[in-house]
Length: 366
Ligand code: ADP
Ligand code: GN1
Ligand code: MG
Image (cartoon, rainbow, N blue to C red; front, side, top):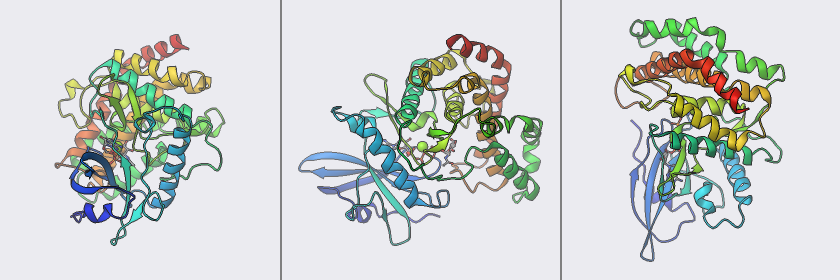
């Protein structure tokens, strides 16, 4: 059991004005602990996001926060005259020591952001317009970071999207079968083994020089972008822990996974899980609107494939975690990681059924 956080005490370590009012757990992320924290500033209620960084997942929180400071300042510097700049990029609140984080007595790292008001994240996509906006926003995020000065960002999780290494981790978990669960996931295991050949495609192309490393988000799922409550515009990309050198196709792939199917990530009713073409068209259009003039021809030609691969990869990670006894992703009920895996794999099948048509659509946009 994780210890309960004394948010009021933590708040004293940050440059915050006014009086602490209350804190509540917030959001549905699988990794960090997020709180919405209210302060009273001379009669105004102001909200902040406090996050305890999961240091079992991110082993170097100081380097991670260095990345986030650089990335957020770089983007903010591009919008000097935009009045609502800090609704468009996360604003890190410094600690009283002037650092972008603080460390509590138990060795936990904390950070604080301004709360972006009048916008929200969605756990499941509802309309193609949302998909267009979210994809446009992730594309713009990549574009604004294309000229980030050296040195390269730290790798906060090495080999994060190295699918062959993810496959290897799966094989290890399967061989060890510590929770005796392999029996209950036979179909999913055979699904994975049949698709080993696709795991190396993007990495191999990168190694041959056909896909460049750029600054990418690497966790570009729908609920990591805030959509404006009034206009519906993709206003602010969040969850910047994995922003580091990567392939643009990783980001596009996770958009396909989370923005082309209205079923939630852990949907049990698999008949609801389909890749819906109008949503795919919307994310291609939104993403290319931002990044079309930056991408090389391979980065465009493999958009549909990337959707399949990254959906497969994340499903594989859920399956691995299920086999390993649910040690990585937060779960709220037993079997949730297996349900998550099944939903991703059903989506992979649906993409396989439509892949040629998806590729054709992308070609028509080039
Ligand atoms: P995790 O890494 O655990 O996924 P996130 O950084 O994605 O954590 O935050 C979890 C949720 O908190 C997000 O999905 C979003 O709803 C909300 N959130 C995060 N940062 C902000 C912010 N600055 N303003 C408003 N909401 C936020
Ligand atoms: C995690 O932090 P969150 O919930 O936005 C995970 C992603 C997975 C995603 C699946 C650091 O993202 O890689 O794709 O869950 N983040 C990390 O929903 O592992
Ligand atoms: Mg998140």
